[in-house]
Image 1 (cartoon, rainbow, N blue to C red):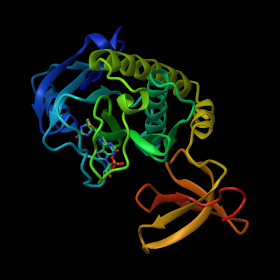
Image 2 (image 1 turned 180 degrees about the horizontal axis):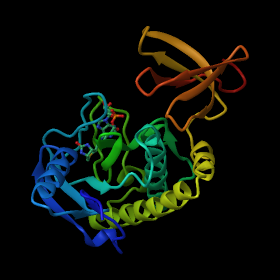
Image 3 (image 1 turned 60 degrees about the horizontal axis):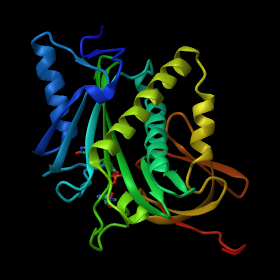
Image 4 (image 1 turned 30 degrees about the horizontal axis):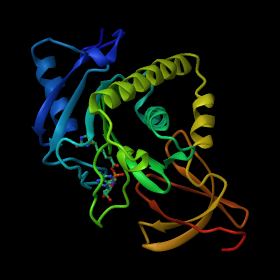
Length: 274
Ligand code: BT5
């Protein structure tokens, strides 16, 4: 048993808490884990904190996650690193992204549920879910990981500010939030179990392959914004490394970009023409 997380919980849908309103489920869960650890208590892996509404829902890099009250799944899970070292935690994000993708795929009658590097789930080019992974280290070891997932379920109006969709918009009907949460939780639990198996066998290649199979724009020419130079950049997406770097090819050369260096703008090769 670790100092922060107890492993091998049988059913993750049975452990967790739900609140009406909170600033951010990621922040509160982390505070709860720390408070428990101070008194020698340990929360189980898969423990979740879910909220009907967040007053300060977070995205990456200080961005905001917007979701109207009572209509969506806003949840954070406590996970171990699955045996991954801090510099390999992107592999955990890949596993989680595929689990969320699979959950969404099982809930909509569409074939095109994809993962947009690094952490978005898209259907028909619109974002249906976002993932925020935060890890807490002790020295060079991962103490625990907080996985936050925002999944748009019954919200149908997103204003004009975001290119978003929801399960209700895609299905033409509302879904039960508890049932959606249980499906998501089960996918995540089985993904984490598989990941641990792959990590202990020293072979995460099958995960890599699946990630590429569902990667938005894989093998295609895409235009990106270089966030460092603020210039547009055209390249063919040839993959994502375990470090999280995106691999682009152009003029026979390979370029690698970290999570904070580029962002997708558009698909640039349609109908055989740029
Ligand atoms: C993410 O960040 O996509 C990660 C979002 C994680 C949210 C969950 S909710 C539970 C947990 N607690 C938290 O506080 N956070 C996690 P990023 O890749 O930075 O994308 C953020 C961007 O997505 C914003 O700048 C908007 O453009 C867009 N966005 C905001 N709300 C959205 C929504 N409901 N649906 C689709 N896109 C949205």
